[in-house]
Amino acid sequence: MKPNTIIVGMADLKVCKAPGILTTLGLGSCVGVALYDKNSKVAGLAHAMLPDSTAISNNSNRMKFVDTSIADLIIKMCLQGANKNNIKAKIAGGAQMFAHNTTNDTMRIGDRNVEATINLLRKLGIPVLGKDTGLNYGRTVELYGEDGRFLIKTISHGTKVL
Image: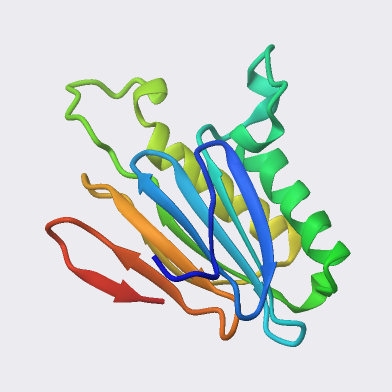
């Protein structure tokens, strides 16, 4: 791991400036939301587990949910010098890690996380420049504060850059 790497845990978020690198490991059904302002070189990464904080009565950890983690991430980025109007997004994760013979919405957590992320970013006017979501495998990601590069690593499906 590079010395300027900051680890983002599950149900966590972090912000850094260039030359920092943000990474989160093991995105399965969780979604990694990478936000970047190229003018200020401020990067933010959230590792959200669930789509909607209002559907859960015990939502004391705001970083666990797509809706509240993205809102908090934008605030933290702006405190570090980002301009909300310049922020762009890339997302990864939202996999269906286990096969289910049901159409029950609660079993589609990965799909629901991705849908919630895209819908909220659209509502906030933040364009999604790239995504690597769905399917049935996990991902580890790195977001580079220098240029907004979003590196996605998998065990058996290679590496890609968004």
